[in-house]
Length: 247
Ligand SMILES: *Cc1c(COP(=O)(O)O)cnc(C)c1O
Image 1 (cartoon, rainbow, N blue to C red):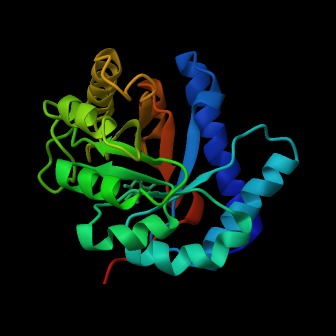
Image 2: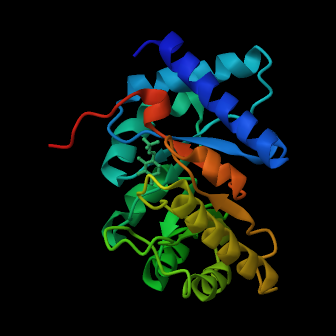
């Protein structure tokens, strides 16, 4: 992958975020871009990080991109090759308890906390760290059975319990949006996630006051997510190009 290609695509993503913010009357600095690196090897991810650094050096005014991996196996394979660039890694896929230690070696945040068991496990294992681990509660806003996440009804209580655990800092809530061509369906799901976030922050429970993050929106629908208040959009194909078909 050429740095120039990826640079142009990354610039286009930032442009989309900017115009979606302007349409919604939002400040583009409220929205962070996370690159979903699944199936991409370390050189491809490096090209994206270098393109990002070059754009910022040239005055783009954008915050550094975040990186996300769905699978711990890929995180562990890629992250060691990029330590010189000190990226911030988020786990964005389901995390099995037997992979927690490996994930914590590289991850700065886990966006896919969907039950108490994983939250407890993370809390127990992060103690050696100097800084708390950022965690996000993943919510299945569409109810599609294939999707990971707790239900919108159960999410606020789970988030309150997670926020109270030692070693963890609740950053917000995350979702993978509905798979639909109907933008109103997709937007309604994102509005549902925002309502969950608002309920968590309004709870006044310990550790929830700053848990105002909303991680939602991908390459195909980031405009809808920004319109509904996304603070992190997660893009893969828009920056890296199409992924190889799964074997
Ligand atoms: C792959 C993935 C993305 C990015 O999807 P694109 O459609 O390639 O932008 C975002 N979030 C999660 C959880 C993903 O698995």
